[in-house]
Image 1 (cartoon, helix red, strand yellow):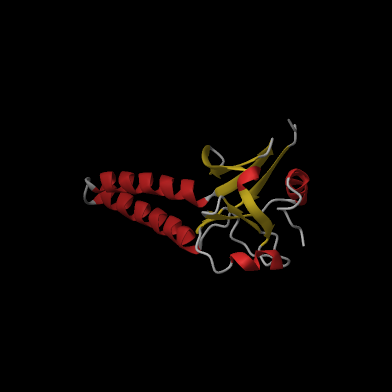
Image 2: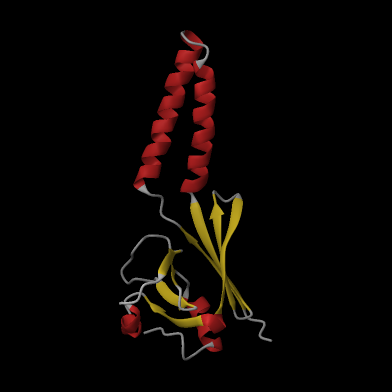
Length: 165
């Protein structure tokens, strides 16, 4: 059994509509709270409901992905607002068909196939593109952003499936 272990974190990009929604909800909370205190007391309950909605918007707008490699398994967790963790998936390296950078020529034979696409990357396309993709068990395409050490450790286990270009 290999005792290889590595983890890396990637901060996700906050979509523009979530930023707009946060500011809109804050504005509505202030407006309804003011109305509740001055004219209509029932508007306090509306402001409280908007406050709960704002909590969930903030929770789901600050997302990080944690990639963990341990003994031939890649585990991906989603960390929401640095307080909650949700397991997204556990992928066995033995079932990975191919793993390569997004624009690699090694992936050309997979372009015309239909897969369920799971994007676990930050959503930011840098130059050069650091995102990798792997095809898992013939049914799923997973896009993620591992660091070089992570790719090197996985490549040591399956050198014919993992490409660096």
